[in-house]
Amino acid sequence: MLIPLRTPWNWSLCLFALSISLLICSCGESSSNGSVTWRFAIEETTGSVQDRYAQEFKRRIEDRLAGEVQVKVFPFGTLGTSDDLTEQLRMGSLQLAMASPGHLGKTIPELQVFLLHFLFPDDEAIAQRALASPELRRELDPLYAAKGMALLGLIPEGWMVWSTQKEVRRPSDFKGVKIRTMTSPLLLAAYRAYGAQPQAMPYGEVYSALQLNMIDAQVNPMFAIEEMSFYEVTSHLISARTAPFLTTLVAHPGFLDQLSPSQSTAVEEVVRELEQWSYAQQSSLNASRLDDILASKPEMIVIELNEEERQRFRELARPVQEQYLEATGDSGRRVLDALKNALGS
Ligand code: 6CS
Image (spheres, rainbow, N blue to C red):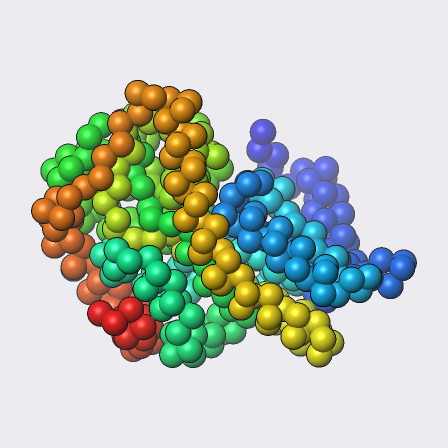
């Protein structure tokens, strides 16, 4: 139920939330035993790629900084939408958060480079290495800093998969299909180019929108289609390998500035260690979640587009790269060039 913002009850709630956030300094929540709690919010549910990452980050940090630091993970649904998490991180009430370009691209348009279709090669290992490219990071770091965030890592979560109510093998099959995308504008442009009718909405609204036939399709990696139960309300899983789903790990800059040298080293080391670790995790999780879907719904139709079929989409995706460049200018061009160099394309 939505409560109008002007009611006194709602104002007292806002004041209460504000006073709580003031008690939490940007360096974390202090406890009486002298330890500090770092608040880490993720955009996905327990058991997801982001949750596995956050739990492993917690385990390794608490191991290295025993008695000194605790990490508290806030899963999807506890602190609001992706946009809400980003806002809380910029305010300093979160120390760490996952922020996907699919949503953060509204705030940092250059990040939409990761939403362009047919840029990443089939070989996911190449993509994984490219994301660690220092040249790419040199372009991205100031863009995050300008918006009050520090970029710590880029984390791939697996290929995007269309879950639909019908077979989609060629762009004409998308005609009239209302497909939900994340909220960055370039995603809408990509699906418009295919002839679909894209609609942006937050993650938490997708299941009921499918159930109520407000939309006909959505796009996400396989693990998410399973854990958010999107497969229950769609009939086809279609892999066109248009783009991987990617998230970014961000920190509040004031939090990083206040870390002791040993804490700073621990964060740097753990983030670096988890680059390879999380890549292997997402790969096995996506594969096992498809098995889970088929075990629970054997009639689900799974389609892998062949090269000829993918080529039709690839051609329509090309002008979207121009739209990206028009929207982002020189800095967008530099990010695109850095990514292409890193990918060797
Ligand atoms: O579709 C979304 O909005 C979300 N999908 C995933 C896999 N992670 C977070 C994001 O918010």
